[in-house]
Length: 116
Image: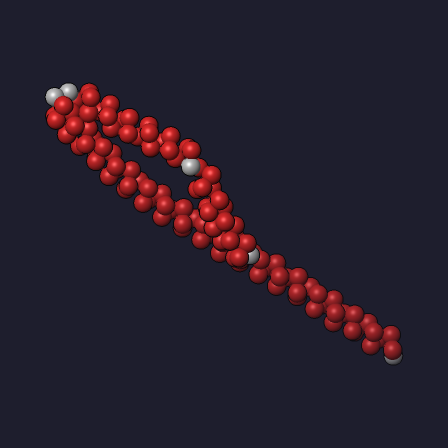
């Protein structure tokens, strides 16, 4: 009689553990899906906005180069000035890259670890 009760309790505990493991697995699966989809939608938004901004910058750069070229009576000098500006801007970004890395790392680590 006592053995049957113990066996029923063990079966009940086993069923509870299985249910807990299954629910925990489903929970983490949903959390990872949510985190992944949030990352994908964010990356898509950044990609679309980046493409539009790149096209706008391209046309602005071309117009600035042609305008400078007409002011200097040499189109090639206009393009050289605009190209030089971008080289200087790139050098400044390379020198300041550490200041960009830390905030980005903090933001993404907060995004990833707070979601899970």
